[in-house]
Length: 248
Ligand SMILES: Nc1ncnc2c1ncn2[C@@H]1O[C@H](COP(=O)(O)OP(=O)(O)O)[C@@H](O)[C@H]1O
Ligand SMILES: [Mg+2]
Image 1 (cartoon, protein in one colour):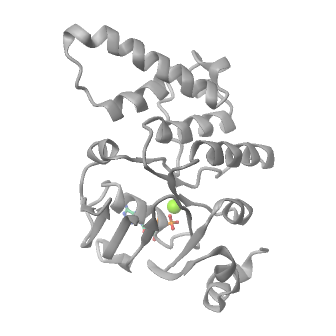
Image 2 (image 1 turned 90 degrees about the horizontal axis):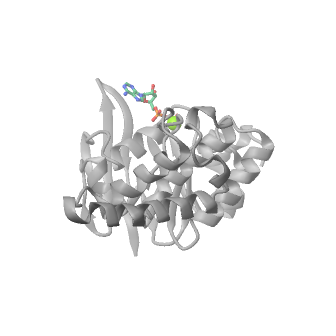
């Protein structure tokens, strides 16, 4: 089953055509990488899928239900989580408070006054469990702004996953990381996305080829190729447009 599908998705910014007839299919349970040169439209594709922008044309299906233009908080409740290309933790909040925010947004504000405190105990327990899994229990009460770059990106990846989504979308989670930080992030992503569906935009080909079951190449706003990593490596159009310039 396709957990996510876009049909004839197009989008423009004031006449600049950024997405052109994108038909993306993400199978349930796969780790799917989206690659392509800078400016290809990868982040815009995420923004259109996750409700930051309403697409100019086309539809988005999630779990076979049309979700075109649904706002982000509604998508979180349906089981979609995402991270952003630019670090987007709440820097003035602690690691604990950031993760708790993710957990609360999945549960929605459905508490009533009388069971509020009981529910908060649950949420606190769950938040501490997540912090432990991501090795941030030692930094629980430190503001996100004080974390190292690698840890603050780990926190961000974990916020996208704290809501326990069925589908998680990560936009360049290793951008700006050192080799060691990248290695740790890949292991964290592998661990946290076990049994889930993941779509990852990634520029580091080592990360792409070590994580992805399938790859889609976006070029000039359209899908140039989509398939198994070996097929993509051998694809002549992909080599010409993109991979040829890179050592893979
Ligand atoms: N909010 C926006 N307004 C105008 N142009 C935008 C906006 N967001 C992205 N673009 C343009 O759309 C194109 C694709 O950008 P983006 O989706 O960020 O590419 P990628 O993530 O593949 O590098 C670029 O030319 C970029 O300048
Ligand atoms: Mg981008």
